[in-house]
Image 1 (cartoon, rainbow, N blue to C red):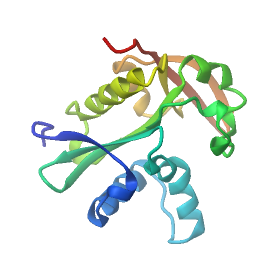
Image 2: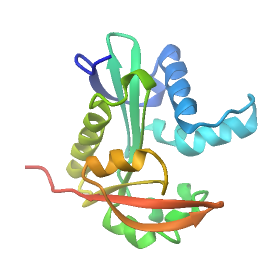
Image 3: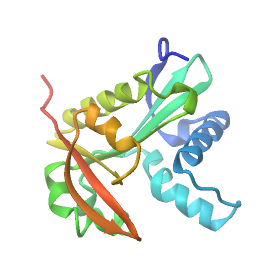
Image 4: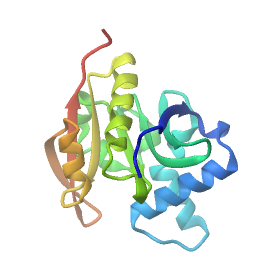
Length: 185
């Protein structure tokens, strides 16, 4: 499939139709590589890495739509430094290992695509759309945190991010990837 014709829209989770929420969840859980039985553990995982970003405020939710109703992918992120926010206390590396880096690159993001839409430039378009929102909000930089050996590290490097630090969290080596931003023209 091609990303031609896919449009990127900013939305708030409360505005999403149930069919889009179902597609969002399918992409999210497929990309996570984790399977859960329905229940509290599944809901807590979704809330930590996706749900909290869908409420609006200074958070950004971008959807890549192919046609009228097919979700090709999404990007969710926060425009404000997570190391300064109590709502991110459950992700302690923001407040410890990466606190100084979060000050340099305060906006952070998570991006995932449906498998059929990977490798065609759509993820990079989502990154650039988020970069525009973050720069307009006054963020000096943006970041992503992922597994040091994860396949998406190369994607972020191609999108202009650079490695700025590593840390161990829950038995896994993480990498902090940051990208400087310039303000609006």
